[in-house]
Amino acid sequence: MSPTWALALHGGAGAIAERAYKAEEEHMAALLDQGAAMLARGVSALDVVTEMACELEASGLHVAGKGAAPNAAGVVELDASVMDGATRAAGAVAALQGFISPVRVARGVMEKTSHVLLAGPGACAFARDQGFDRVDDPKTYYVAAESGLPGAGTIGAVALDANGKLAAATSTGGLHGKMPGRVGDTPIIGAGCWADERAAVSCTGIGEYFMRVNAAADVSARIAYAGQSLEQASAAVIDDVRRLGGYGGLIAVDVKGNVTAPFASQGMKRGLASSAGLREVKTF
Ligand code: ASP
Image (cartoon, rainbow, N blue to C red; front, side, top):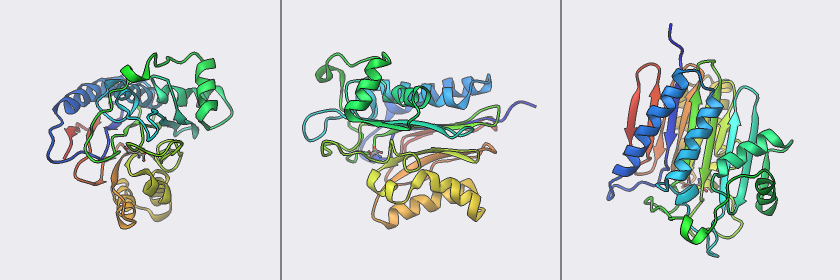
């Protein structure tokens, strides 16, 4: 029997109906096929989500990595996180300045320190010491991808690998014109990113709401405590965000290989694939 695997990617929940997302969808389709092939040949969920998130950051098509926009002071500050479901190891960076791949630095925090989250100058010092690739000139490197609604151009990846292990990664430039030092849900383990032995989740949307409903971890909690399916749990969490007045979406996979991507917004750039034959790239 061929192994069960599942993969979901997102490029943010800020897509608007007035705009076409052809370049984003083409890039996501190619990436989805690449990630699916990696999972089919036994690459770990953790390596696949890191690689997928890194490519989405580098694409400049979403508000993360190269596509990030400056804050109100004209400075690009980036947030990212990664979590390994099997061990619950996690790493994150907040308000990171000047590095090409915040998600790789987050993975470094997870693997090279005894901490989960490094912020601001401390995160930069760590990234520098570890030799992560730097942005030479922020003025020419960042392209400020226009995603649609303000913010909501975060990227994320979640995966179940052939060994039954789950992982999640999320990365963002945050909200356009945000206050200097503002940190959203993306690097907050449990809010914008979560993986355990039940599910892996990555969120996008107005981070303040996702933090207040502890969105990503609540998907798994609902499965564990309320006996909900992945689809029910994920939809209920997005309903909570909507009830508070927020918008956004999430991607989630569970240990059985189910995949879901609910959103309360006009659209969410997403790609879903599984060993059961699912292959879907959509924005609306
Ligand atoms: N969740 C992100 C934040 O609030 C924004 C996004 O999803 O684009 O920083």
